[in-house]
Length: 377
Image 1 (tube, rainbow, N blue to C red):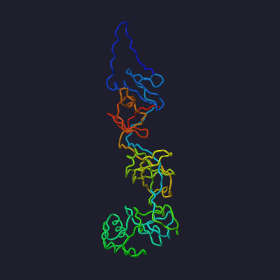
Image 2 (image 1 turned 60 degrees about the vertical axis):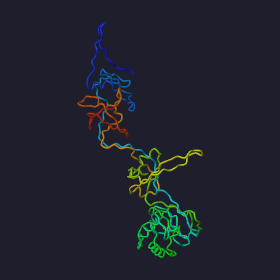
Image 3 (image 1 turned 180 degrees about the horizontal axis):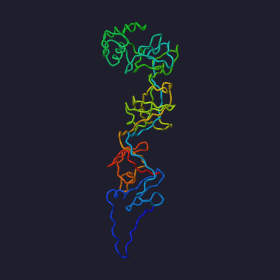
Image 4 (image 1 turned 135 degrees about the vertical axis):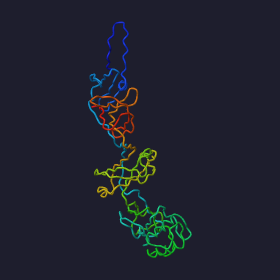
């Protein structure tokens, strides 16, 4: 592109007088290149004479006002990323038979089972749900100790049994409470909680599916049913590099199928291995996040649905921002803004920060909220 210039007249053979460079902001104007390709305008070059040319259009004076303007705004700037999520009840867990016998009772699919209630029955004896974070893996009896013992004692206490100390040791006092509990549930009063009599889960559960039938023989290791938690959660899988924005406790926004937006919070984050798409494709490492949501009307009416989850990757609070298109690229490097004051344009240099949503964080000497700055049309 040709640059507009002004040539001073000189006498033949005389040395042209050296022109003085304007001081102050004129020095800044001398090196401005305004990148407006995104707005459909090519670019603007301002030379030392104070004249400039826009795209292929006519040469204009530097004192001409820009074709469009915008306002410097103070706000919180969020860099957000959107991901696909599945609304449901979270991870599905299998309840496996640990004792041989005949399945004599099963709950309905979708039923909620709470502490101390039967999850299913084998030979008409209940397999009961208790709350705890360690799975049952052995008989519990006098002399054993561990977290599973503490879980058992805490559940007995919550169910109204007493006379023992809730700790990690199975004592004679624990034995007596267990005998009383067995009597109440119609079990043999042995004082021993045999493996397979209880299932520990973090809390109450929702029966997801039945994998066996009443009257069917049960064998150790056989899947009886599957269950989930009872709170609606959203499962989101992200690329491994996106893990920083899916930290536990992070706030997110969830858009439901009907367009309603509800707030959510990341409650769990785990690394999972996802099989490759093709036969010979390598498995991929992903980040799986569980998001709890509010109880909006639309959410209450949904059991399963695809939703959009918006994560905040970066946030800058109480900063000055302008549209990205308002930035002026300086010939000597960096960026500036064309500020309109008193009906006249001038240029100030700025530093840029976070770019998000078509806006950019800016700072610079003399820059303040409410200033009018130039924009490509």
